Image 1 (cartoon, rainbow, N blue to C red):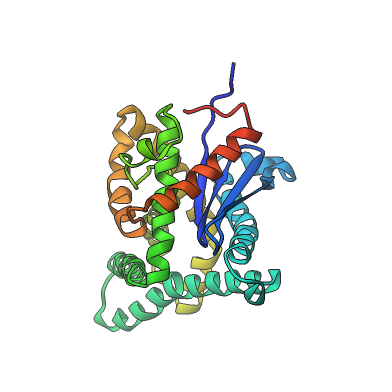
Image 2: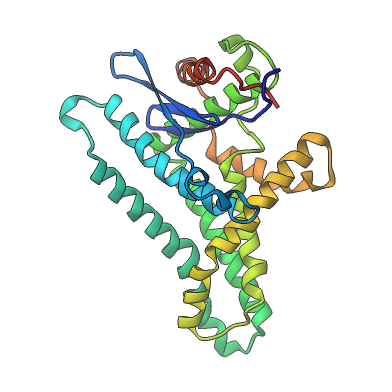
Length: 294
C-alpha cells in the first residue's frame, strides 16, 4: 500500500521545484530549449530538531526550510537558465535572499507601525490604531503584489507558479501528467504559500492588538519578537483551512480570499512552462515511489 501524502512545489527562475517527503526535484528550461532536472535530498529542520514538528512550531520550521532550500533552488535555476558568463554564486544568492527578507520586514512589519505613529495625536484608542496599522500593512502587501506582477520577469515567474499548481492538481486528481490534462486545471491551489502570507497579515492584526499601543521602540521589538508566533498560528490555520476546504468544512471560507489573491500571484502558463512542471513532478515521483495523491 502506498503512503498517502502531499506534494509541494514552488516556482523558480525559468523553472519549477517539486518537494516530496525525502527528495526534491528542480526542473529548468535552458536557453537552448532543453529541460534539465536536478534531484537532491529535501532538507528538513525537523530531522535535526525533532520537536520542530510540533504544532505552532512547524510553521517556523517550514519557513526556515523554504528559505534554505529556496536559496539552493534559486542558485541552481538561475545558473541553469543563464550562460556561463552570467552565473550566480551562492554568496550572491544568499545576500539577495537576506536583503529581500530584510526589505519585507521593513516594508510590511515596521513601516506600517511607524506611519500610524503619526495618528496618535488624534487620541484614538489602541484598538483603532492597531486596526489601522494592520489594514495599512495589508494594503502595502497587496499593492506590492499587484505592482511586481506588472514586471515582465515576474509575470513569467507567476506563469511558472501557475504551471506548478496545474501539475499538482493533475497529480491529485489521479490523472496522467500530460499537457492535455494540465490545460484544464486551475492555476490557484489551496495549499499555496500565498494563503499562508495572507493569513500572516490577518493574524498579526489580532495578535498585536493584545499589546496595546506602547512606544514606537517597544512596538518594533514586539512586532519582530512575535513574528514566529504569528507565523505558527497562520501556518496551522492554513493547514486546517486547506483540509476543511477539501472536505467541505466550515473553515473553507478562509481559502476564499487566499484563492482570490492567487489570481495576482499566478498567471496562465504556456505549454513550454507546463512541460517544465511535468518534468519536475515526474522526476520526483520516480525517486519517491511511495507518494500518492491525497
